[in-house]
Structure formats: structure tokens, C-alpha cells
Length: 166
Image 1 (tube, rainbow, N blue to C red):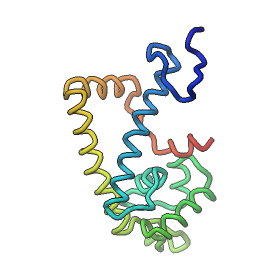
Image 2: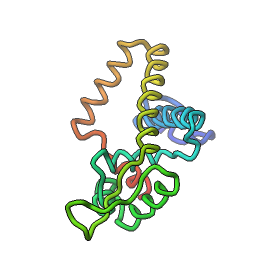
Image 3: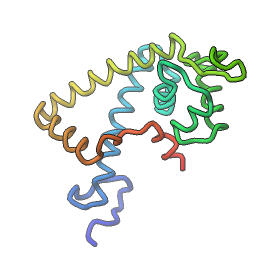
Image 4: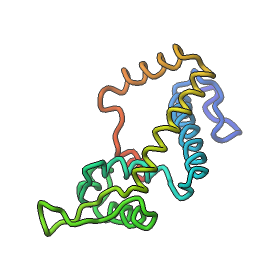
């Protein structure tokens, strides 16, 4: 059991140990997301947080009710409602009457929310370009292909934020 516990918390000791793989994958994810949010802050979205991105994606272009949003994010309707409250306060989303059912409210993205998503897409491409410069196109494609193969078609789920929260 060499290298199982290290004096330096959160330090990758030997990437060949099985427990190191999820730490390395998470470190890569965290590096990308931190860089994304630093750039988004410079571009006029200083309050945007990673959970907001998951929520905006879950709302989608067609909108969603709080119940639908909760299911998509893997959180309770109440937690989804609090998320919508925060997104409304930041100007990223708004509640509107559902044209198909007057008893329901639909959460829709605002132009500010759509701007955040559009800018995020551009920044993600820029970050990927830097990873290509560091690793090479072929190595990065092999990494992406390998991860896609291992995670399968449902590898990415919007409920990741809820999953982290327990």
C-alpha cells in the first residue's frame, strides 16, 4: 500500500495508482472550469458559477418548469426553485407563464443567460486550443476518444452538480 496516504493533501503521488485517476480527471476538470470562470468574469459575468452553467444547460433553449429542472439536475424541486431564484437575481433566467398550461410557470433563459452560454462555448474552444498546444492534437483526441469510449453515450449528465452536493 505504498503511496496511499501522502503528507501533502490533494497531491498526486503516483499516477499509476488506481485512486489517482479520478483525482487527475477532476484536477483537469477543475483547471478548465476555473480558467473558464476567470475569463467569463473578465467578459462581464463575474457572478457566474459552475453550478449556474449546469442549470442554464438544463433549462435549455425551450425552457423548463422547476420540477423538470430539478429532475434534470438531480435535485429537489425546492433546490431547483432556489437555483432559479439565484439565476433570476443575476439576470440569467426568468419565470414566464407556460403558454400550454396557465397553471404552470416556465423558466426561460434571458439574453444575458444566452450570452453567458455563448461566451462559455467560445472560451471552452480557446482552452481546448491551449491543451492542443501543450499535448498535441493527436494526444488530446486520443484522450477524448478514450474517455468517450469508457463513459459511453450517457457519460455527461447535467445532474453532476446535484451529485456533488450529495
